[in-house]
Image 1 (cartoon, rainbow, N blue to C red):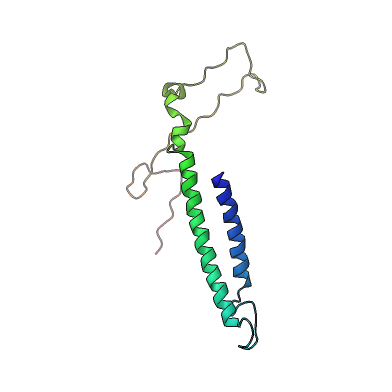
Image 2: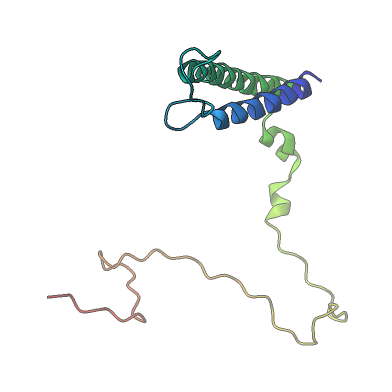
Length: 146
């Protein structure tokens, strides 16, 4: 419940931060206010206020983000993804077995009679043309540039 409450507060703070940033003028003034120094709030005063509010909302946003991360980590516990998969119960010998071929008299659905065996990937080889090991003769070699 605390996590949901903090998430709602984080969203409200982020929307307020976006609003305050959009109110500021890019030229350094704020709210696009002109006017003389006799007004209630001068352009400089509005700029200082919006800058201070931006700093406060930004700091609050980062503190809430850290709190959300810490609380979510504690709720999840000390288990990792690998711990939750329960790989200890998997038998490695069962993974390396080939599937049993179907009996000779039964046909697989969707496969024509006498269908070829499934393709197997070739064994990868490392070829280094600079050392001359296992050079591929099928590919033409470009002559060196002069």
